[in-house]
Image 1 (cartoon, one colour):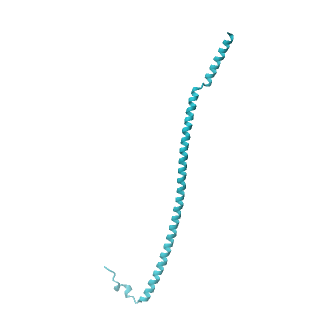
Image 2: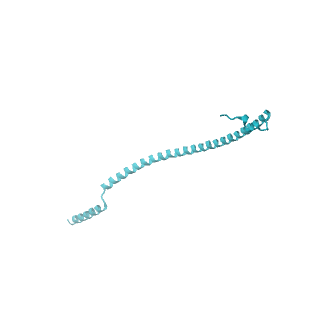
Image 3: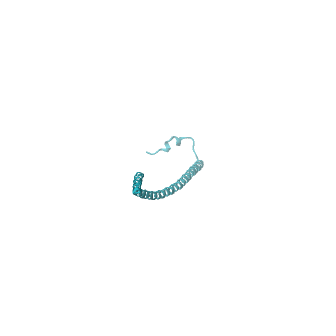
Length: 123
């Protein structure tokens, strides 16, 4: 079922609009609509620029963070190497200490030497 304009209230009103007047009204409405679309487009463009600038800033921050992570990873690898050298040095020190005489043993040996020296003196 279609809208029957001829039987509608608007068609039967005493107010008739001429073609020229209708054209002027539609032209004015079109201009107003074009202005509105221009404002909406400008607002959209501004918001899009803000998003692009924000994204650019985020990309710069991400690059800085990525560089920091790479440097930290490199530093960690160097620290691992240093730790391995330290562990090796500690193991070497342990081996050397095991070969050395501790203080108690040294004192005991010193007493024995003194005792033997005294005995030898009397001979």
